[in-house]
Figure 1: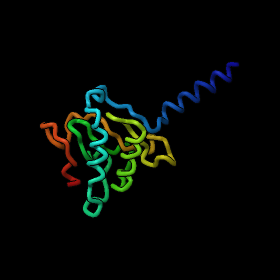
Figure 2: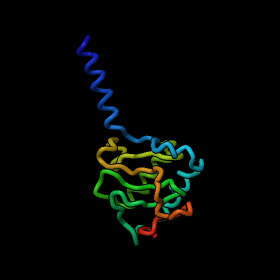
Figure 3: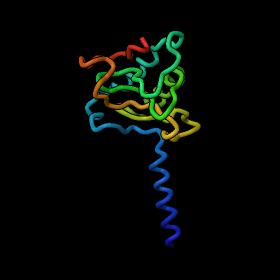
Figure 4: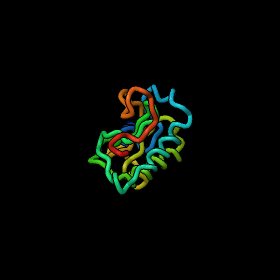
Length: 138
């Protein structure tokens, strides 16, 4: 019986550490406009892949006011993949914040890289709370 309890705890720990696609983020996420993720999808899908084909880890890609998209735990990713991932995150039901594994749906572990939409204290659009593609991708 103790062994079964140990296995249960072990599986819960593994699940928590290998969190996949999710709609979690900062406590500020609840204050974003209801259509913020929809705007984010539109912005990212408008990036010209002929001019900008790659995003680096940690680099803000687009912001809807203080809600920004960026990569984490990765060496970067092609814009074409980011366009697919942001749409998948929106289709998952995320409307404020969220993260999606870089290799989703084949690998649902955000620890292997992720696209994140979360609150940013310093959005690339400046202090005016603008909605825009970040300068590196314009």
